[in-house]
Length: 245
Image (cartoon, rainbow, N blue to C red):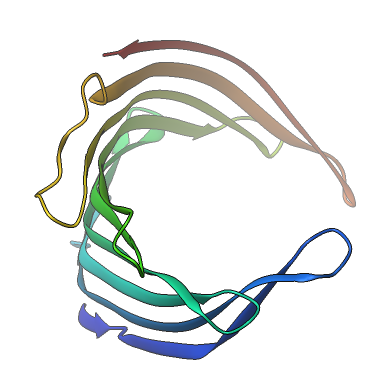
């Protein structure tokens, strides 16, 4: 099984924004024009293996790319209609994500063992740019905010199931998980006459890790023709650490 998909999007709006004080008096109005371009392209692949014995396996993989580009122009006016300033805001995002998962099951001893694994990754880069200039040239600014986020998730799980007496079922499962989140930010600032430069001490970042494990014992049995008992006993351990710069 294989598939490709595309999800483009286009949007726009334009109009007047009214700004008033607490008494409803007009203090400013803005003529704004907004456009948005979004696109996502991806693909999926699925494979299964089922020979004529107790073994069976499956493998699934997906990959996608997402892009966002938004832009807004804002001309600002005093209540008497005099233009006071202009501003431009742009937002861009570039993202990719991938996921691979699979499982393998086979008979072992009196029961059946199933091994499951999953690996997911996502990387996103954001850029926000705000340009502002007064109509009389007395004030201007140009700021850029950059952010990147990386996510990782790894899961490994094992399940062993067997049938007991009196139509009972047993299952033992073990699972281990590793999660990672990394985020980095920086700010650049300037005016419309010079290129923005890095703001001192604006570089920031954080890294968060989680290690989690769990174990469960599940049992079910038929008590009456219309009544079945299902019980489980489990334990989970999780450790989360974080570091920032």
